[in-house]
Amino acid sequence: MCWAFAGAERRCLQLWRGGRARLLLAIACGALVQLLVTWGIARLPTLQSSSPADRGTTSRPQIVDREPTLEYEQRRRNLKNGIYEFWYYMETELRKLQSLQGKDKTRATKGVKIEYILESVEERMLSLLADFTSMQTFDGYEKWREAEAAELGDLVQRRIIFLQNPPRCAKARKLVCHFARSASFEEELHHVVYCFIVAYATQRTLILKPREPDLGKEAWQEFLQPLSKKCLDANGVSHSEWPGKEETQVLYLPKRSFLYPAPPYLPPRVPADLAARLARLHGNPLAWWVGQFLKYALRPRPRTVERLQQSARQVGFEAPVVGVYISASAKPNQYEYVIAMYMEEVEKYFDSLALSNEDIQRRIFLVADDQILINRTTLIYHHYEVLQNPVNRFGSVDSTIIDIHFLSRCDYVVCAFSSHLCRAAYEIMQTLHPDAADRFHSVDDVYFYKGMHSQHQEVIYPHYSKSEEELDLRVGDQIKVTRNYWNGSSKGKLLRLSKTGLFPSFKVKVNIEAVDFPTYQQVPLKNLTS
Image 1 (cartoon, rainbow, N blue to C red):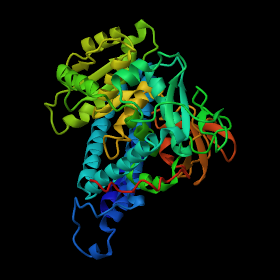
Image 2: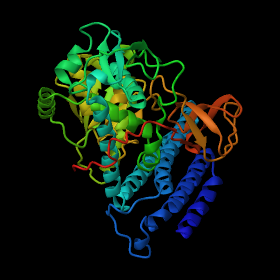
Image 3: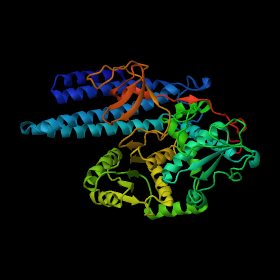
Image 4: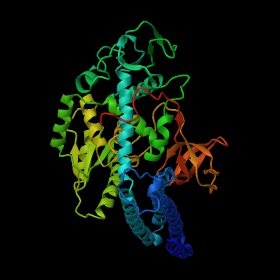
């Protein structure tokens, strides 16, 4: 393996002696060598076995009792993220250079050359990603990932069922969650998750109560199963607004998704008894944790199940398919630009599939805030099969349920994380796969949960600023990240110096934040009936 790295490094040095475009390629080449070295190191744990009896024997793929180490799984995810960040940087810098040269007609031909370089680098990047993704299938740990995801998800669902169905409702401690009339259904869903997390942490049965009698009725009475089979009222001998006292039977939460003072168990924190397992299994433990409560809240009634199955037949929903939700606030004369911004990422996804199958059908499930956006997308990207929600009632509860259902079941989703609908689909997606943390592209924000505690990332590589806008970073520094620009750089606040600036995105990692939650000893760790 070392000789390959050495040969790649020599080629990088040759590129270094060229002009600015070659200099950029040299930098990218060096970054790629670093990624390959990282992968070489990351592969080492695959030679180890979790069982002493297996050591010294031939590696046996696809065996459930062989487990990857935490270091292996983290390095594998870091490498894939590094490949993406490498491309974002290369594309952005070469586009800048192309724009500068385009203003000088005598250098226009160089702009054409840069376009060729961009296409060539993108093709190689997609090939590298495809090969890397296939490694996960053949590294011998996929069955373990599937089994671990199923076991963890089942454990949380059984705990929620236990919490929501107390033996004696009249004696149960309860937490009442209010709706706000101004909220959309998808925003209400995230408010319910916030209430559910508080209920889970305080071991209180969650009761939903709309502020107005008719609010929420359409969703939880007509389309979704109730949160409990036998405890739906807020009756009790003592009542109090939050925070109340431990012995108060019925507590009422504020209608907004924040508490003051904020308790320690709100997002991005996850239960300490699950944290170590989640850190190894999943690339975004917070999204997985939120997704478990959404999964329970969105359990459909039999009539709704039939409606979803009928919709799948109507739209011809099948893989491969990319979910696209265009939540545009742009003016109509900017629609084509907005559509292109989303579809560019869709094109990249299908281009990667086309490397091994040129005849692949390009298909999207398209949701938009305006029917004009859907019509224009269908017209411009006529070589795509465009699937749409058969219920054309923008913002209605049944239409939103269908949108979330199908977006979450796409192979990949392109949307804006600033949108509740986008985040809900992404969170539900995490409950359908062992780890779907990277099956998305957000055109704006990084993933977040509204009203959550600050989420910090840890510096894993030092950085020396190259401009006044950048931060100097030390290994171990903590950063409160506020934005990923998807160009290789992110923006955040360096807590050590209380200073805000830019830094390379690949030089940090997300820390999992664990706090003590109830461990629900009454619920077995494993489902004894399965």
